Image 1: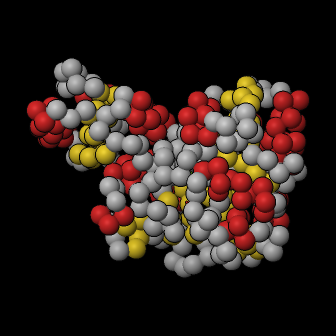
Image 2: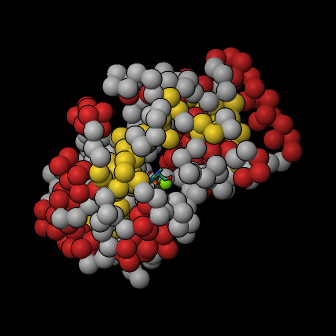
Length: 342
Ligand code: TXA
Ligand code: MG
């Protein structure tokens, strides 16, 4: 299969191009498209055969369910049942946007989308191309991130092609996904309500609507029926937490040791530490006080280290507030060496 690349203006999408892409979805094939968080790999959510192709292309285990994307809040009722006031308050506040809600599913949603669960994850993305694609397809669109299973999520069409060229029908090149980490997933089917995956909306914001919400933890680990090792580049990641001088000194100690041992390594650093590591291979993700920028650059920095073929990435940790919680979650998951380590 040849993967076609279709360039579409993110701010003023050309409707004839959108129609072409949505036609592919309607025909039961796969289209990768940008959202405000990361690129998704879309298929008609009501067509089980089309959805099966997503699992095949990504090499994703069937028990890892997909997120269903809609373009109109009203369509929530076609996907989920038992929509209550809290749900409406949340979508009133955060949709369209990087918030995925887990709710009881409607009959029409095939088992392959939900991994056989009676619940469905649904969100309305805040990105023109995504919204008009879904609208034109006239069906909810199931879309996980458009990467091979376990790899860092793609924030550009180029990243999608690195993983899926020749395995999908079309990728829409609509520029860089602006948030850079995936949506926050909130489970509303079990009380107390909890955050299954930190993401684009911070816990602090969610607490305005659900004051008692917490991160869901099993054995101390954030868990969403998701896999511990995830979002991972080929290199091993070592996270150095903390900040300021102590953090920099720890990173330097590790770097010197790796250098002596002849390892190929890189340092993922905050802007303010840019000049602290001499000639070592340093990639910057953002200033420590700007989690938004750090999130936006995180996955592409990890992919860039893969291009350099480093064995180890020493990553400076960031403050776990707002998007910082999602960044640290992704770094920790990416740093798991094997599932036995957790
Ligand atoms: O920002 C995002 O959410 C992106 C863009 C493309 O929208 N999508 C995304 O999808 O990150 P994905 O497949 O990479 O992650 C979806 C996660 C899965 O790992 C799964 O565990 C969780 O959502 N999920 C889906 N359905 C669920 C359900 N019924 N119950 C609990 N978790 C669910
Ligand atoms: Mg993913």
